[in-house]
Image 1 (cartoon, protein in one colour):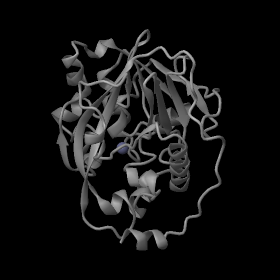
Image 2 (cartoon, helix red, strand yellow):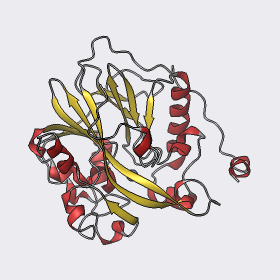
Image 3 (cartoon, protein in one colour):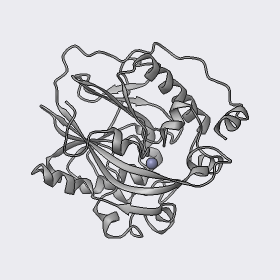
Length: 299
Ligand SMILES: [Zn+2]
């Protein structure tokens, strides 16, 4: 089945861009990473993979907590916040919640923080791969944190009301937003980058396609590097084969699905060149078993 689908899929392989090396900061400040699985949902395989697939597959919606030794707690994507746990019809709202088949809510990030005797006020910074509701819906639970974001994504996510996966009621009124210049060095072929703290620990890599200002997030810990793909890839198959998402969903949800597919090619090559890089696709259910279980931490 898979082979026949691959054989009939004729999108050409894009040229290799740039050198495929993960940057090696010389003096990483340390810190730790913990993974929060906030919800699961059912994804139709025709949505998640390619036309012709049948059946359904479980997907996960996650947030990630980086404890920086001097900058404080940093959220990488927020998943859903308390409002969704109270009523998904309120957030993300009746239209968008209708897209979430068999949504099973686990715990919002603020509840995970309580395990560490932390509160929302302890989160100093937030970065999001993009502003879609399942990645940024929890922003309103962290009103004091600084949101670091691509100005293109901020514009796309705030210029309308509910639109193409955005529901800006979770973030449009926040005033502590840092719009990034993306003036960092090229990293593994991604030419627009931003070093959030100037120490190499947390980098945003501009990777438009799924949304106009989508970013990948590269977290460098002394023990290893993590690349969070957001929705550049929903599943490992999207970047490992690579295989674009299903036709209906990519046309409905994505700004430029071919650009998103090129991002997946570049990630695949990067991961092949650096097997120590841990690549985390946005909704891959295998992440639940593959990544350390909360509150265990990577350091
Ligand atoms: Zn998503």
